[in-house]
Length: 215
Length: 384
Image (tube, rainbow over all chains, first blue to last red; front, side, top):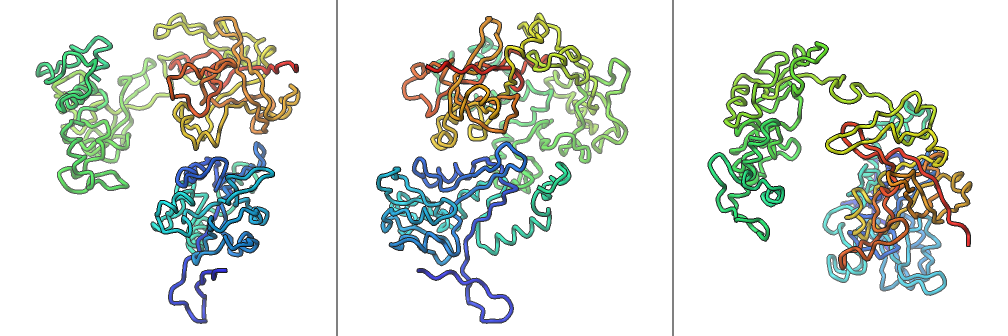
């Protein structure tokens, strides 16, 4: 397995010469308005096959008090269960923390689908009882293990915005900036600033005042 | 524009400016694909002259072209030009733009800057006094600097004086040509001078009809009759017990005709449906995904209109309401209209149009259709 990226040390201890980024997604469930912009932008940008949702907005308690929407892409876990269970090491961690897939190595066993708590791995050619075919999932718009921007990479994995220095398409278009992407330190900074400025939870939007409760 | 004028019968007048007919305009626009560039400028100059009332006269072809050449000097946040020959101009010269030196007015009602820099009062549309004697000019201290310190009426004849002298003399004295008035709450010249609740024609609450009845029928409103009282019957709700409200879904954003041609959007929202509360659905023997007829009160032709739609069970609507998105078309009362589309233009998704069942009713002043509150009923086809 690839090494995890080095996280800058605090206080004493040897400082690494250059800290690699650790790329993350963060979704603020109090900001997501289920506009679907992330879903459409991702599909369009990466030409995602029909029926596959590399990012999906999940709505819970629809129509009831406390209805919540949250966008769920691949969360690029630090200790990804999909990477752990893949029998052929088709899934791997990049140095920047992105969990990547090699579609040429994938045998379509589906173990990653069982392991993932977010439902990120999907199978475009799969049927209920037949062969699954090769897995497809959110790539953090970082393409795949092909030459960056090559035709092959685009066809197999979609666009490679990370190599252009851009962030994933979904976070770029999020209407409310509920979905934040970037280096973990930067994302944490954004979240801290938001909580400091507005408070957390429903209180951030004045719902305590409007609805007389903190949700 | 010229083609438009030709079809409506006033081409001759449209292409005639104060300096004579426009140059290079062909005898007919029927098959014309390109026009001399001078014609586009002539059209804009015509608009400049025809829209003096709102100050659309400063956006001359020369100024707009120059802005485009100097687009790079416009600040990305303020949209204001920094330096160059366009210094101080606002991008696009938003109206009112009272002269060819005026920078445009990006924010209406800014009375902290002079009119010559984009300041503006509130347009004195209704003259200096209301019929009951109330003053309709702005109060003391509520005026852009450089002119009178309070309200003033519009400059006499400013909208019709094609020499623009009236506008110029107002500007010279620091006054906004269309005056500095105040907003009114009592709109004495329209049907309800102050906002008044009236029950919709198809009201779900008969007892409220008594207290808040709708308008009298209007025999002729902009050349069409508009019915109200004659259609407002308290027993509609007995035969059509559910409230019908129609609206947008975010994936389809606009009217729907364009959106239903986008594969990505259609994949997210593939078909028309009605949102129905679980109690209503179950009382009518419907399950999530079943099809049913939704019918609405008889229109002027005496027939119920109806749509054949799928049921989405959700608590997003209450047990008294049905919601239907309005973005679909291509099916009418259960029958597909696919064969009526030109070759190759059938969208990825077709479905019933909500407007088939929206109830008769139009706004008393604006004639906007009533799409948000109506009545309907469910009719489930019999089991075979």
